[in-house]
Length: 174
Image (cartoon, rainbow, N blue to C red):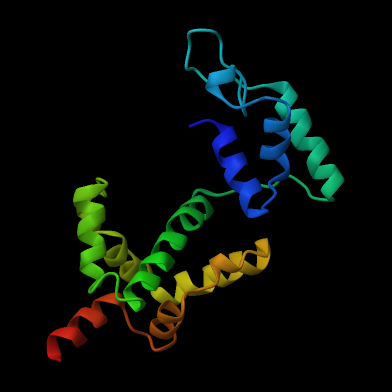
């Protein structure tokens, strides 16, 4: 899927992404057009840095009054994984999944989640639900994105010092 797929989806939902939208408006949809965030030589899938994109990023940041910053590996991991954990908490609360381990099994066998990590909900318990909930709240505020607010179940477990595993233990006791 090219950049145009996300662009169309964002437009339908009224969401703007300054840099990605500018790339798409310039017809830069990725490999299919030979240009996106990177340049692609004909017949090659190798992504090559593109000075035009660097210039666009610099101009956009200046217009928005923002500066480039270092994004750590930990932040990338948090921004990718914590929303998934949050969605897991939502589907547990809605009864779509009966147990956290149900979610883990789907990810382990359906998506190839690394078995040694035990699934996303198990992994979340090892990270700490309070940490995850606090970071989600931080990202929600930083980005003004309400979808990143901690799910009520996640916040409740975090505030009580509990884990997702405690839900499974409670259901066995009942």
